[in-house]
Image (cartoon, rainbow, N blue to C red; front, side, top):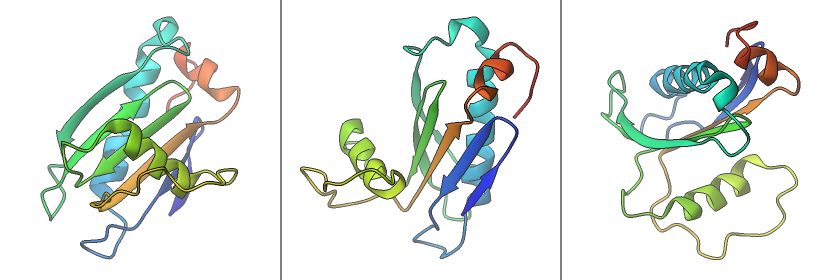
Length: 135
């Protein structure tokens, strides 16, 4: 599933447990875009936040891990907490990046049940951080 706001383009996989897009995942991603934008000038290209959260409205009760930067936010649902973040990022590159040409060095034995990527729309990210646009 793909959709846009004024500041971001969102791409999400279908949940492998329900067979449908996950509205709780989309809601979390929108909240993360607002959180990063609210960091304002502090959100330099090196700025990043990582963490995990229970998707309260998910019928399956998933935990979601996220990595958010001003230019890109990724959320991984239903992952093993022992899975290294860089392996999840490699897996997301394989799923979301059109220019990605190689398989990750180590395929995930337990891939996320759903994933989402929110990419900042060029030029809109700066305006959002300055408080002129909202996601």
